[in-house]
Image 1 (spheres, rainbow, N blue to C red):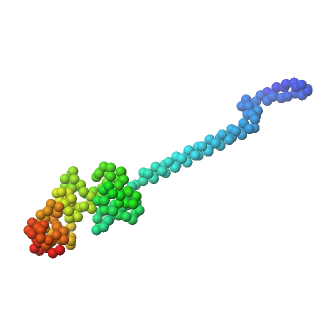
Image 2 (image 1 turned 135 degrees about the vertical axis):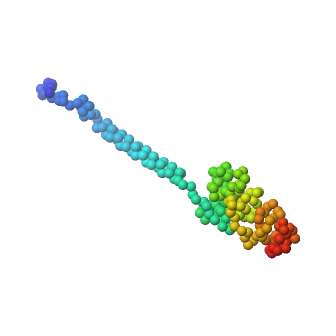
Image 3 (image 1 turned 180 degrees about the horizontal axis):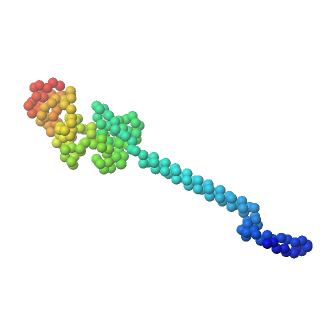
Length: 206
């Protein structure tokens, strides 16, 4: 329903009561105010996009941090078990890991996460467990001819599974505690008994 109101100049003004109050209010708002509302909507959308981008970036970063650990197994000199440095070219013997000397260029062989709780903090391939559960040696010390475990379990028996004495060793029952089933040929015929039957002095040749 339309109402008429007399005007001072004699004209009649019409007021449309069917328009909502909010529509009337918006029409009466200054143009700059309406534009500021649009600007706020754009700002809110931009902030939302930034938050989404940050969330995606965080997820990617966490994925990189949680990725599978680098495989550092390698074969060092004499085909011994080794540790591969970050340069992916240097392979150091297992026994040089966590020896308080940085053998890798960037010192990754001495990092706290690797050396903080020996031997549990070491990768399994770097460790050999002796027959005595309380004892362990580095994997490259297994089958090296030396009694590193103290009970020769790293040199003899099924646990170590070592091959026969190599060409640089003489097979016998050693006198010295440091050897197990072989003695170095360099000790042969040196005038000192190293084997129980003296075979290192009578039969072995350096």
